[in-house]
Image (tube, rainbow, N blue to C red; front, top):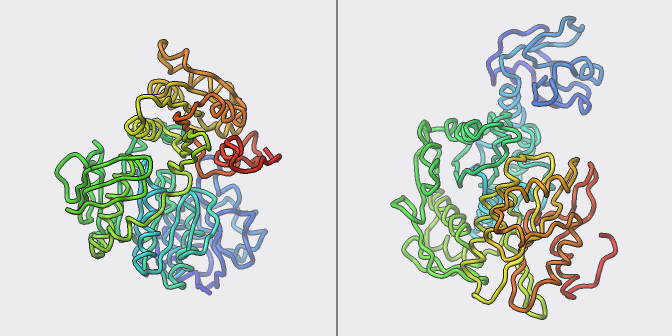
Length: 491
């Protein structure tokens, strides 16, 4: 149990109305979840303003409220704490409430458009392999050692995050590897956390539905590094033109990694095949089970991070060579007739380009590449024609289909993608709105030796249409169509 007086010492307070010697048993930013003797934070969000729900929170049992603006009528037996930034106060007070768990763990965050999930998942697997207790916070899943905790969004809210970190610290985790999204940075969902290190993978056109401009998106990513402490490290991809921008104002120790230029950590690709990568890294030649140039960057970032965390370079490479590919990232399924299907989460222009270029680098001249791709609804629409252009340029045949249309008309999304296709490539493009039919059509069109890329959903086992999540797994559909497993009637 925490006293309000102690919690408010964690942040700057402008004014307090009411007694401070209160026992606070829980923290909330959703008035519907408030419990008796809870502390409610009135956070101004992008869609809702928590100040509108102060009375609802009190009715549910809140004994204190943290807000930026006092309500016109103050309720009896309730303490109002006025701050300049409720989201920031929430982060700091949540950390205090849970005993500052992030300071008891080596917490490493990674931000960037692509590669976040793969990098944190590889780091988590690596450190378990090295014999440590370790936590994982990613879009796919959260883990405490090998125990899985379902993930609901890229970065949990700051209360859930501190609760999860507390569980990790109590379970003996020495390390935690965490995806840090631009939304989370902008909404202060990582405020109050103590990071041991930060990694920057890359930045490309994405999330402009939220950030509106690329400059705002860049600024959000950079804020993560601006806030790193002096005893942390900042590791950035020097081959991304914004890599050095990220660390311009950081107090952290600066490090770089690169495939093409002088950097603190270097690697070169010796061999790139569908069954793995041969890299020269840290002066040693190592075979990895991952595929593609983009994964060479991910592996190099993982290696560099482990070394910066004091691990032995040779042992790191030995363990990393045994790590399996990440779920939904360049997963390969081969048919009895030697058709290669690849399922990948690529859902941004850059990620799609990376995967397609990797396939084209590896495939033989006789193999045709058939790509099934779409774009998510209620997300950045500006990237749709760009994705259409890329997929038509780099494939022999394209089937545009639904991804997660959410509340948008899927056909409209596909037409927007098709608008980006160069006139000379239009003849390559089919539009099949039904994703099941699109995948089956691709499998039917493919001949022995051909390659099918099914992009956009990767590890996801659902399709979101008009607010409803329907069971759907690209990998299962492909295996059924190839005759590798029995058909499932739930599609």
